[in-house]
Image (spheres, rainbow, N blue to C red):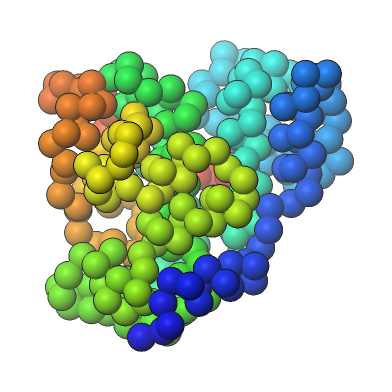
Length: 282
């Protein structure tokens, strides 16, 4: 076992930081004098980000009636809040896309995370209890704490994964046993270091145990249900091989009926591959 949570927290600075272009975009979006023209000009200074953002904007995630071929048009159609979340998602995925994770492939990790974001977005739209845009980002970032564990403690995480495969316990419980912390705790801390709003950190912290969140937030409940659905569908993986147990209160909180599940599943399956490709293509 390592020295635990504090040691890992102290090493978060070894991870990739979010690129400067994201911080400039966020500052501009939060500036009352800022404009989408300013934001587009900042994004266009980064050709790779520009290409990826346009691919995602034209993917099945948004279902635009006509293809957009410039950043300003994409941002205008999507809207300011959604644009902020899209740029954050794009920069986070880009920062970690090519790093080795050892026992779990980075593509598989992001397949799972992106599918969770899509499922959360659909759940929020149907259930009407959470903002679809906030739910999408919360779902996409819910397992981000596994990245530091795989990257900073690869040998210990390999041992925890092997114990999980040997059916010795749920992976988050084995993380606690082997590392003295969990991906949920580390994920919330990582998002704080990036100055991401607290609701997303809370969803990362409590997505396995939403009943412990005080006060409860709709993003966490939606993320919990989306994670279960995507794990059951086996779309990618962040290491977990078992479908977690559903929290009944979270299910009630999201506003779904059992009859809504086929629509959530169908949209998640039909959309996930296209959106993942849009995010992960070079």
